[in-house]
Image (spheres, rainbow, N blue to C red):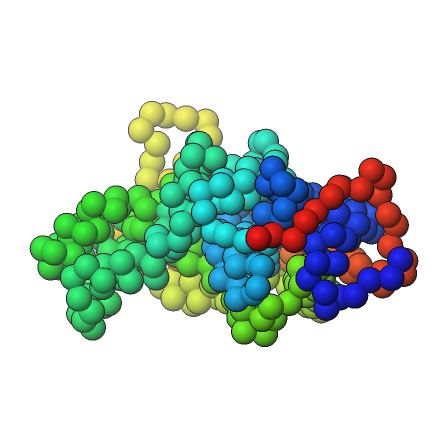
Length: 393
Ligand SMILES: [Zn+2]
């Protein structure tokens, strides 16, 4: 078929054909279009199958959902779901483009995202506090943890009690504390006004010591810059061209990470190797003592007391916990756990680091299947029956 990429009306009319071809060359992908009672376009949703598979099997189970404002004649809003791999790279895993950022579009996008994620995977969600969609995450993902990005919580505080360097400094100490004890100490140093604002938000929404483990230490996930500046670079672009640009971006991101994965020769990703190296170096010389079991047992004790030259922490190598909170929070053994393992002559760290940080898992994410970009319009297949889409008001 012939098709003009520059014509808005033609772009809306041909959107069902275009999305059909996304699914044809990326089998089992999810694409949906929401229209109003007069068949006018409202919102569309796109998830490429291999991208959501990479997320479900190989990336940290945390999703940031945000909105990018688009300045167009017809299109005003883009929803983006962004995930993070074990090397701290961010990848858009789902997006929606529409005419408005309101209750209907937010819940529709979240419902479609829920379908794409499917059952059986526990996922945490992070949003900015001031984003409209943050009000609806809990209504769609009923049992999931939902917290706010720490940056947006700080901005919310600044707006209510005024901006000061002191607030910025004092906010991040309780925000990043690993234990509730450390949290209480640093929280008490904030002003009365700041404490009141933060208490009303709820500690588990922003303070690491109160996160369920599933937040994986993720305080913020940024929308990739390429997407966040779309309103500038793709101003008033017809919808098919806009989706095409985003699919090409995702394809490039995957291709680049696939190359990086092929070059890595370590057991863990560069990020995890860096964390482990620092923790191994820092923990040299820490004092370790085995805690005997409370009751006589034929099995060796896996519980240790580790003095790190400042304080003593208790490590349970069997349960993968340490009283410092860092092992659970990040999924990478803390210095105390590394010391305890060293004490037992175990230098194999593979079981003390979550699988998302392993290079073989990283490679699986990006090398199992490619994201395929859409061929020229002349090669498009036309679906039957063809959905009617009219240009929005
Ligand atoms: Zn520890």
